[in-house]
Amino acid sequence: VLFDCRKERAELLEALVIPDKDFAFPQYSQKVHLVWGENDRIFPVEVAKSLKENLGDSATLVCIEKAGHLVALERPFVYNKCLKKILASIYKAGHTK
Image 1: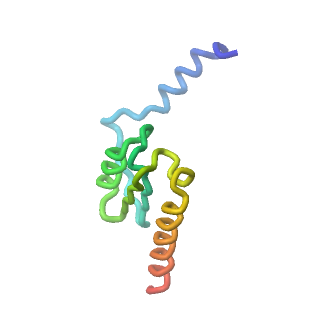
Image 2: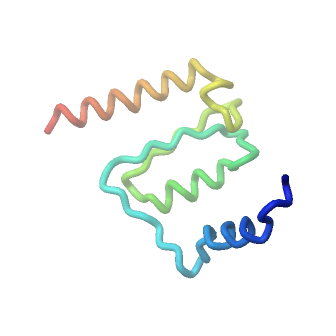
């Protein structure tokens, strides 16, 4: 079963990859909030910092200490506190207009 349609799967994966020369970073009109685990071994914190830099001033980054890739499960109280701050800032921004 793993080898069924192997050629087609490889072609599909190739088609999904965007070459670096063709990539344009999207610009979002809304705020983007990144919550990242400092010890994430799947997507290291350097990826988050680069992502925030590319997103510009509309992005915020919060790094959670002693957390890996599953921040919400590994540090639920810290994550929830962070999420409440984000939601409060969104609520406040919506009511000041």
